[in-house]
Image (cartoon, rainbow, N blue to C red; front, side, top):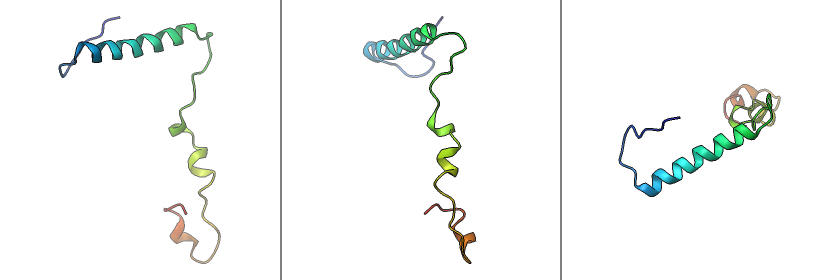
Length: 69
């Protein structure tokens, strides 16, 4: 695996920190059992949007459909 700096001029400390993160993630992925899913990202979870932000019924409920209360 080759890592290149495409833009910018990182210090040796910044480059070492970035490389440590990449190597730690690669080691964790290699240690995981085959077929195991990684942690689910909260941003992609549809229940975080739909679960608690339903508008309350009423005559003006259409005005509250975009902005959660």
